[in-house]
Length: 96
Image (tube, rainbow, N blue to C red; front, side):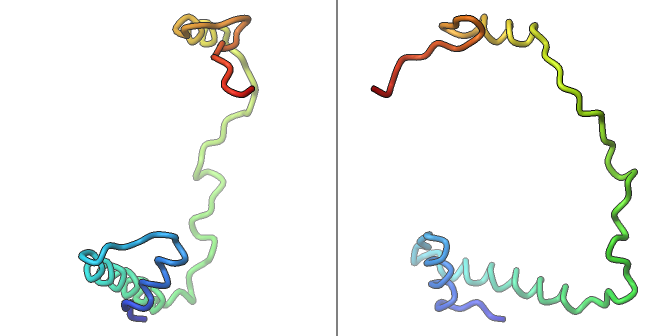
């Protein structure tokens, strides 16, 4: 698949972006390189590769998800706030 000006115009429309005229050729060239690289990946023979070869329960350390609250953190944050009351930030009213 080759990226051309017509495809770039479609990508601009889909992404709600505008590529400046002086950058169009550079963007087309870069997108073409990316598409060529991805096309090369599709040529790899993965018939004998297990689709779960990287999945392992030991791969990521999981910690116990236990909720906790440290009042030290809350107090240190609140003492740096310009205004606070009962553990909450006091801010000016902006909506009537």
